[in-house]
Length: 284
Length: 303
Image (cartoon, rainbow over all chains, first blue to last red; front, side, top):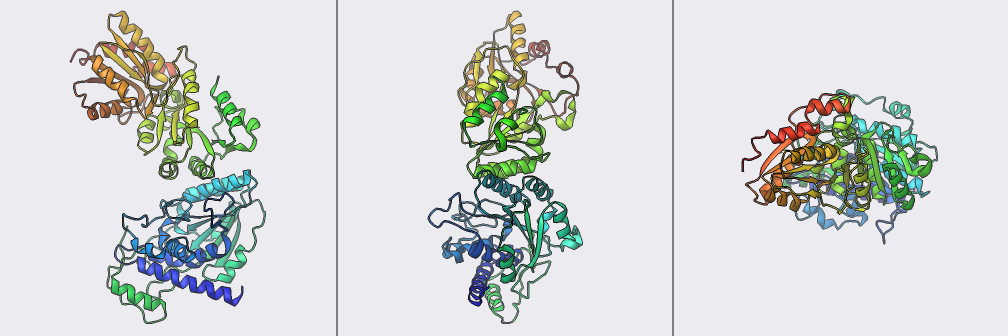
């Protein structure tokens, strides 16, 4: 990866994190899980997903499905940076006058499908991937899942079926941030050895640092025709970018005051850690 | 024409149609070799099948999806509601062996809440044909519509010459001053015979084959309520959420508050499994039993 590209992507990621932090004010958002998948999302939309600017519904486009739908701030923050969404609209978060709320809605340009209930979009994405295969169309279909989401049996059911149909145009990216909602995955329903589990279900598996753009670049450089679903386990840190939030079980859904948001924005830019007085965990 | 013949013919003419099944091939045995890769068997995976159907529909396909009715409507319920329903995708659900048609399988296989659950999904349409002839009459319009749909598949041969189907309309077979029987699906035949028994005893008896439960033919229900002393809903479904509930909702909404309604249905229970004829007898749904329950009902001349 060239320095220039890497720097550009890093700057974009930083701005997406600013959007996320701002969206945590007032009604709040799932800040930890949003901060963990920023590089994944920025890289995919900037470098992988081919879209037709004149026709967002072009059947030849690539598809990205966000199955861990509670990452809306990361998704819409990325959309704002990519020019899909007017950045001012992010301030409509949780206003019934717009469609920007805690989970994705197809009325927002760029959202391929709504999500929120975990374990759904692997199957929807498999249906899209199967249709592309039936039509001989070389679209790439990517679905981002959480790691806690892998508790859902429907994910594994879909992998069995997708591999039976040879859907190598389907890539599952796991945002492996090590957390369920409020508990570490390995302390509740352990997932490791995760790569072995995916291999046992017939997938090809790579494991990368999900915050490293050059590793993301290598993982997405090719789409080998293996006849199998491709899984990329992206190791990430929940709350990445904010040391006061990183890898903390109680920073799942957060609602901050305006002053806390200002402090967090400074923390993101390397200043001292924010002093948070808001309730540390709001269960939604 | 059979279900399978109609499906084959329709799918061969329209390549948007894909035929899916969760390894329930009873209705589609010959489809694989005729449709090639537009036949998709996902194995015993109702959730994944419905999710994939939503994905295929996003790409412009019209998936016609097959599984046993209870597993389709219950195991995959949230996928139907949240993937097909919220997006209002044209996924067509064919539920096999609904209601009494699961005969000897036992309560795990009894789909007797499917009308209630499916009609509870915004935008979802619900159809219950009386027999194979009725089914084949109704399906072209159901499959051609842009709405998601659930069909209680009933491919029992009947010997009744049905009228042609108008979408959303009931088949009003007869009016009656004393009683109007409202029925859907497999119990049509026995209800038709019950009508003859009651008529022999001197009652004036109407009969409506409901066909479409959502949208429901409200005017047919209101006309029957105005013209008959008693309405009787006959269904192989729980009392909650099926035709009895639908009729009650319509009568209340339309302020037709003097109507008397008798429900013949399954009240808070699964039915005793066995051979179909014996099930009908045990549960009180033979023609004579249906007629007797009406004749002996205190509601008959209550109005």
